[in-house]
Image: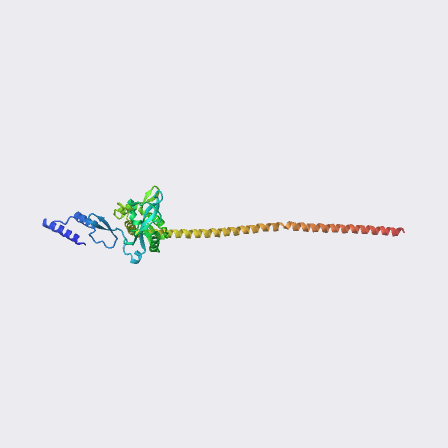
Length: 337
C-alpha cells in the first residue's frame, strides 16, 4: 500500500472520529480516491511496461495494462520492434524511399535509429508525416548513413528474431528485406485489433490502437518512428499470450489438415490400386473367355477328321467293290474259256 493511500485513509478516519466517532469512512470516497491514485501512477506498478508522454508538467509515466508477467530475459531478447519513415521520389513524389529507420527492444528502448540517404532525387520529404527534413538526409552536415549500411545493420538485428510492428510489409519493402512469416507479429493484421467491415475485417491505424488499448495519444503531429515502434511492441505485449495461443491453434489445425489430406491421398491411391487390380482381373477373366470359346474350333477340327475318316472309309469300300467286280469278271472269262 502506498504512503499517499495510507495518509488519505488516516485523514478520513480522523475526520469521522472528530464528528463523534460514529460510522465508518464513506466507501464510495475511498474507492474514488484509490481509483485516482491508480490513474496518477502513484500505486505500486509491479511488472509492466511504462509509457512516457510529454505533457505540460513534464513526462507522465503510465503502466501498460495487460502485459504478461514472468517472461525471462532470454525470451524478451527474441523480440524487436521496427518502424520506418519514408520520403517521396519521382515526378509525383509517390515512389517511397527509406529516410529513417528505428528499432526498439522489448522494453521500447532504442537499439537502432538512423537517418538514411536516399539513392535518388527526393521530390517530397513528407515532413508533416515523416518528420524528415532536407538537412536530415542531404548535405555534408548530415549524419545519415547509406541505404546499404542501414539495410545490413537492420538485417543483422532481425536475424532469428520475432519482428513486431504495424503494417510491416511497407517497412520490409522499403528496406528490401524479407523475414519469415512465422516470425512476424503485425498489429495491423491481428484480428482482435481489426474492425469489422461487412463480412470482412479492416486494419486500424496505429494511432487508434494506441488510444484504445494503451490509452496513449501518438502521432499528434509529425510521426516519430521511435514512438511508433514502441507503440507496436507495447500493443503486442498487452496481447502476447492470446496472440501466441491463436498462432499455436492455427498451426495445429494446419497440421491436422495436412495429415487428413495425406490419409485421404493414401486411401484414394489404395482404392485406385484396388480398382486397377480389379480391372486387371476382369480383363484377365475376359481374355480367358475366348480361349474357352475356342473349344468349338477343336470340335470342328475333330468333326473334320471324322469327315475325312468317313470319306476314307467310303473310298475304301468303293475300292473293295471295284476289286470284287474285277475278280468276278475275270472268273467269268475263265469259265467261258
